[in-house]
Image (cartoon, rainbow, N blue to C red; front, top):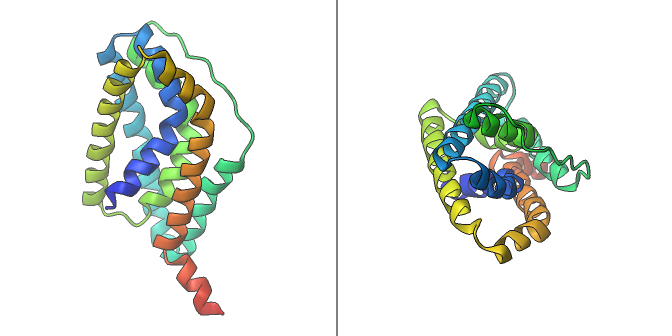
Length: 187
Protein backbone atom coordinates (compact mmCIF):
# COMPACT_ATOMS: atom_id res chain seq x y z
CA UNK A 1 0.00 0.00 0.00
CA UNK A 2 1.28 3.44 -0.94
CA UNK A 3 1.15 5.44 2.30
CA UNK A 4 1.92 8.73 0.54
CA UNK A 5 -1.13 8.21 -1.67
CA UNK A 6 -3.23 7.34 1.39
CA UNK A 7 -2.02 10.49 3.13
CA UNK A 8 -2.82 12.66 0.09
CA UNK A 9 -6.20 10.98 -0.30
CA UNK A 10 -7.03 11.41 3.39
CA UNK A 11 -6.09 15.09 3.32
CA UNK A 12 -7.93 15.80 0.06
CA UNK A 13 -11.13 14.05 1.16
CA UNK A 14 -11.12 15.65 4.58
CA UNK A 15 -9.84 19.17 3.86
CA UNK A 16 -13.34 20.63 3.91
CA UNK A 17 -14.11 18.67 7.06
CA UNK A 18 -10.98 20.03 8.75
CA UNK A 19 -12.60 23.45 8.64
CA UNK A 20 -15.73 22.04 10.28
CA UNK A 21 -13.50 20.29 12.83
CA UNK A 22 -12.35 23.74 13.94
CA UNK A 23 -15.91 24.27 15.18
CA UNK A 24 -16.47 20.75 16.45
CA UNK A 25 -13.40 20.72 18.70
CA UNK A 26 -14.53 24.01 20.21
CA UNK A 27 -18.08 22.76 20.76
CA UNK A 28 -17.56 19.16 21.95
CA UNK A 29 -15.13 17.19 24.08
CA UNK A 30 -12.10 16.15 22.04
CA UNK A 31 -12.53 12.43 22.81
CA UNK A 32 -16.11 12.50 21.48
CA UNK A 33 -14.97 14.28 18.31
CA UNK A 34 -12.27 11.65 17.80
CA UNK A 35 -14.70 8.75 18.35
CA UNK A 36 -17.35 10.15 15.99
CA UNK A 37 -14.74 10.90 13.32
CA UNK A 38 -13.12 7.45 13.70
CA UNK A 39 -16.47 5.73 13.34
CA UNK A 40 -17.30 7.76 10.22
CA UNK A 41 -13.99 7.06 8.49
CA UNK A 42 -14.23 3.36 9.34
CA UNK A 43 -17.76 3.11 7.89
CA UNK A 44 -16.88 4.90 4.66
CA UNK A 45 -13.55 3.13 4.11
CA UNK A 46 -15.17 -0.26 4.67
CA UNK A 47 -17.91 0.62 2.16
CA UNK A 48 -15.28 1.74 -0.37
CA UNK A 49 -13.30 -1.46 0.13
CA UNK A 50 -16.38 -3.69 -0.18
CA UNK A 51 -17.56 -1.98 -3.37
CA UNK A 52 -14.03 -2.00 -4.78
CA UNK A 53 -13.55 -5.70 -4.00
CA UNK A 54 -16.78 -6.55 -5.75
CA UNK A 55 -15.90 -4.49 -8.82
CA UNK A 56 -12.38 -5.96 -9.01
CA UNK A 57 -13.90 -9.44 -9.24
CA UNK A 58 -16.05 -8.38 -12.19
CA UNK A 59 -13.81 -6.09 -14.26
CA UNK A 60 -10.12 -5.93 -15.29
CA UNK A 61 -7.93 -3.59 -13.23
CA UNK A 62 -7.09 -1.26 -16.13
CA UNK A 63 -10.81 -0.69 -16.78
CA UNK A 64 -11.38 0.10 -13.11
CA UNK A 65 -8.77 2.84 -13.56
CA UNK A 66 -11.50 4.85 -15.27
CA UNK A 67 -12.88 5.42 -11.77
CA UNK A 68 -10.03 7.93 -11.45
CA UNK A 69 -12.32 10.29 -13.32
CA UNK A 70 -14.42 10.65 -10.14
CA UNK A 71 -11.81 12.52 -8.12
CA UNK A 72 -11.06 14.73 -11.13
CA UNK A 73 -14.78 15.38 -11.63
CA UNK A 74 -15.09 16.25 -7.93
CA UNK A 75 -12.30 18.81 -8.38
CA UNK A 76 -14.31 20.66 -11.03
CA UNK A 77 -17.79 20.09 -9.59
CA UNK A 78 -19.22 23.41 -8.48
CA UNK A 79 -22.03 21.89 -6.41
CA UNK A 80 -20.72 22.98 -3.03
CA UNK A 81 -23.30 22.34 -0.35
CA UNK A 82 -22.24 23.67 3.02
CA UNK A 83 -23.90 21.34 5.50
CA UNK A 84 -24.44 22.69 8.97
CA UNK A 85 -23.13 20.90 12.01
CA UNK A 86 -25.82 18.45 13.01
CA UNK A 87 -26.93 18.68 16.63
CA UNK A 88 -27.97 15.55 18.54
CA UNK A 89 -27.94 14.63 22.20
CA UNK A 90 -24.87 12.45 21.69
CA UNK A 91 -21.75 14.41 20.78
CA UNK A 92 -20.29 11.31 19.09
CA UNK A 93 -23.44 10.90 16.98
CA UNK A 94 -23.39 14.62 16.12
CA UNK A 95 -19.80 14.35 14.86
CA UNK A 96 -20.55 11.10 13.01
CA UNK A 97 -23.62 12.48 11.23
CA UNK A 98 -21.82 15.73 10.42
CA UNK A 99 -18.88 13.79 8.99
CA UNK A 100 -21.11 11.48 6.95
CA UNK A 101 -23.14 14.40 5.59
CA UNK A 102 -20.00 16.28 4.55
CA UNK A 103 -17.70 13.47 3.39
CA UNK A 104 -19.71 10.46 2.17
CA UNK A 105 -19.71 11.34 -1.53
CA UNK A 106 -16.10 12.43 -1.61
CA UNK A 107 -14.80 9.55 0.48
CA UNK A 108 -16.58 6.89 -1.55
CA UNK A 109 -15.64 8.41 -4.90
CA UNK A 110 -12.02 9.15 -3.95
CA UNK A 111 -11.15 6.11 -1.81
CA UNK A 112 -13.02 3.58 -3.99
CA UNK A 113 -10.55 3.83 -6.89
CA UNK A 114 -7.62 3.86 -4.47
CA UNK A 115 -8.77 0.71 -2.64
CA UNK A 116 -9.76 -1.36 -5.70
CA UNK A 117 -7.73 -4.55 -5.85
CA UNK A 118 -6.44 -4.10 -2.31
CA UNK A 119 -5.99 -7.30 -0.30
CA UNK A 120 -7.72 -7.67 3.05
CA UNK A 121 -4.36 -7.37 4.81
CA UNK A 122 -3.55 -4.14 2.95
CA UNK A 123 -7.02 -2.85 3.74
CA UNK A 124 -6.50 -3.50 7.46
CA UNK A 125 -3.20 -1.58 7.24
CA UNK A 126 -5.05 1.19 5.40
CA UNK A 127 -7.75 1.39 8.07
CA UNK A 128 -5.15 1.52 10.85
CA UNK A 129 -3.14 4.20 9.01
CA UNK A 130 -6.21 6.34 8.26
CA UNK A 131 -7.54 5.97 11.80
CA UNK A 132 -4.15 7.07 13.15
CA UNK A 133 -4.26 10.08 10.80
CA UNK A 134 -7.80 10.80 12.01
CA UNK A 135 -6.71 10.92 15.65
CA UNK A 136 -3.64 13.03 14.84
CA UNK A 137 -5.74 15.40 12.75
CA UNK A 138 -8.25 16.05 15.55
CA UNK A 139 -5.40 16.75 17.96
CA UNK A 140 -3.72 19.06 15.43
CA UNK A 141 -7.00 20.86 14.63
CA UNK A 142 -7.66 21.31 18.36
CA UNK A 143 -4.24 22.94 18.68
CA UNK A 144 -4.71 25.04 15.51
CA UNK A 145 -8.25 26.08 16.42
CA UNK A 146 -6.74 28.66 18.74
CA UNK A 147 -4.90 30.39 15.86
CA UNK A 148 -7.02 32.88 13.89
CA UNK A 149 -4.54 33.17 11.01
CA UNK A 150 -4.59 29.42 10.32
CA UNK A 151 -8.40 29.36 10.49
CA UNK A 152 -8.57 32.23 7.99
CA UNK A 153 -6.11 30.57 5.58
CA UNK A 154 -8.01 27.28 5.70
CA UNK A 155 -11.25 29.09 5.00
CA UNK A 156 -9.78 31.09 2.09
CA UNK A 157 -7.66 28.41 0.33
CA UNK A 158 -9.07 25.10 1.58
CA UNK A 159 -11.37 24.59 -1.40
CA UNK A 160 -8.56 25.17 -3.94
CA UNK A 161 -6.19 22.83 -2.12
CA UNK A 162 -8.89 20.16 -2.04
CA UNK A 163 -9.41 20.43 -5.81
CA UNK A 164 -5.67 20.14 -6.51
CA UNK A 165 -5.42 17.04 -4.32
CA UNK A 166 -8.43 15.45 -6.05
CA UNK A 167 -6.81 15.93 -9.46
CA UNK A 168 -3.56 14.30 -8.30
CA UNK A 169 -5.44 11.35 -6.77
CA UNK A 170 -7.42 10.84 -10.00
CA UNK A 171 -4.28 10.96 -12.14
CA UNK A 172 -2.56 8.50 -9.82
CA UNK A 173 -5.50 6.07 -10.15
CA UNK A 174 -5.25 6.34 -13.96
CA UNK A 175 -1.52 5.52 -13.77
CA UNK A 176 -1.54 2.88 -11.04
CA UNK A 177 -4.38 0.85 -12.54
CA UNK A 178 -2.57 0.46 -15.85
CA UNK A 179 -5.24 2.44 -17.72
CA UNK A 180 -2.72 4.84 -19.25
CA UNK A 181 -0.46 1.95 -20.31
CA UNK A 182 -3.45 0.13 -21.81
CA UNK A 183 -4.50 3.22 -23.79
CA UNK A 184 -0.93 3.77 -25.04
CA UNK A 185 -0.74 0.12 -26.17
CA UNK A 186 -3.92 0.61 -28.21
CA UNK A 187 -2.16 3.24 -30.32
